[in-house]
Structures are given as structure tokens and as C-alpha cells.
Image 1 (spheres, rainbow, N blue to C red):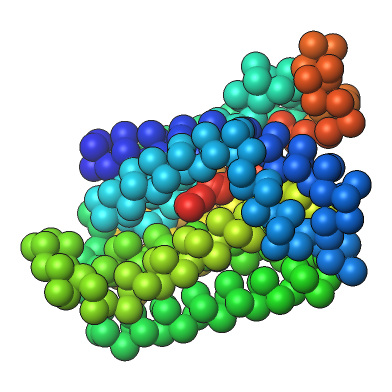
Image 2: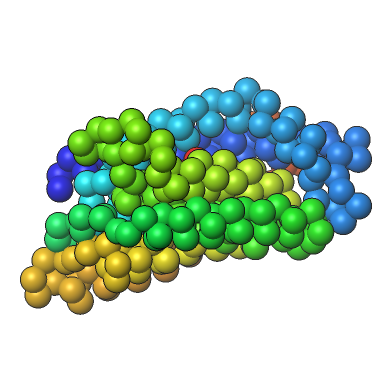
Length: 318
């Protein structure tokens, strides 16, 4: 349990640090592309502008951290109940908010510090109440369903973003969060890991669900950084990557709390999700709290204290 918790915390730190860098690179690129008409007719970023955002050095470094976080998060999902591992990883919003004070010159307001305190307290409750993780053994049909749902979510999100443009920010955040959640579920049920069997691993639909959900979630995450309300999109992402996977873990994968601690686990889970959403929602624009030095570094580029998630995570996963 302790090793799993430390792994999840390390993943959260990687995601949170990467998110700050990704937000800077994405928004700088988005400003340039808007001037060059690098958007669809509905106001959303086209594939070319999104690719250019992903080629900035800030975004590349952030993405490397995301991949490291992905590996650590995958290990945590195998060692912890999903309601604990996914919630700890979603706490990367707190890491992002705190790092923004130093890296982006943002001053956190009282509501943000209160939300951060709620998340930290909730994680202590979750860690105290969490019992052993479930086995993750499920019928192969479940793996096929996970792949089909992942394909539907990511394809639907891509179409929605191109049609709705800036109005799709919250939807993109929610779908990217669901993608990262599907990734966590896929890691838990993946066959051929223990014991290691390459043939079984490569023929498991869950492996391809992980790839689809991870790549698609990263794309929608990048788009959410470029358009609309980042706070709202990030709040939706947190809900998507924690609530549904946590429920699936308890209802179908055998995740449990310690005997007599179910109410503590439920309280901690709800407080952690609410606190993480609040961190995202109350994130103050940089123009209201940045220092002069940082304002010069990022002119005309409002940032939020919470940042984006897989401000994930966000990431690949999230």
C-alpha cells in the first residue's frame, strides 16, 4: 500500500509540473495560430495548430513528464484501489496550483488555499480507509467493451470539438477525463502482465483501449488548453477521471475499504473530488495575481492557478 501511494504521488507531481509547461506552450501557440487563422470555421483549433502547440519546447518537456507520470500512474493503478489511485493522481491540480505561484507568478486566493487544504485532508482520509485492491480479472468481453467505448468517446470528442469550436472546452475536458479514466481501468484489467506473457498482452483488447484512450485523451486535453474556459474544462476532467473509474473499481473490480471504514472512504472520495474541482474553478487569472516579472514573460496570456489536468494529466494520463 505504501509503495503504491508513493508511486501515485510521484505520478501526480509529474503531471502537475508538466501541466504548467503544457499550458504555457499551448497558449503561446494558440495566440500565434489565431493570428494566422489556424482555426476551424467554428473557432476551434485545427489539427495543424494543435500539432504546432505540441511542438513547443515547453509542451515537449511537459509531455515527457506526462509519460513518466503515465508509467507511475499505471503502476499505482495495479497496486491500489482505483478510487484511491485515480484520486491521488487527480490531485495534480494541487501541484499545478502551488507550482504556479513560483513558475507563473500567480498569487492564490483564500478559496484556492482552502480547496487545496480540503484535497490534502481528503487524501489522508482515503489513504487511511483504503483496503486491498481487487484482482482485476474480468471476462474478455469486458475488454472489448472498454475498447469500443474508448473509440466512441475519443472519436465523438474529436468531431464535437471541430463542430462546436470554443464552446466545446468543457466537453473536451470531460471526455479527456473519461479517456484517462478508461486508461486506468484498462491498466487494471490488462492481461499478460503478471505473469508476463507477450502473446496474451498483445492480443488483449484492453491494451488497445489504453492506447486509444491515452492518445485521444491527450489530444482532447491539448485542445481544452487552447479553447474556452480552462477552469471549467479542468473541473470536468477531474470528475471524468475519478468518479466513474472509482465506481467501476468498487462495483466490478473488487476494490474495497478497510472493514468499518467505508464511510471514511466515501467521505474522503467526495471531498477530494469536490476540492479538486474547486481548485480548478477558483483558479485566479494571472492578470489578477501575477507579478510584474511573470507578466512580462507571458504578455496577454491569462493563466489559471489550477492550470489544465491531465491539468490532468493530466494525462497521457493523465
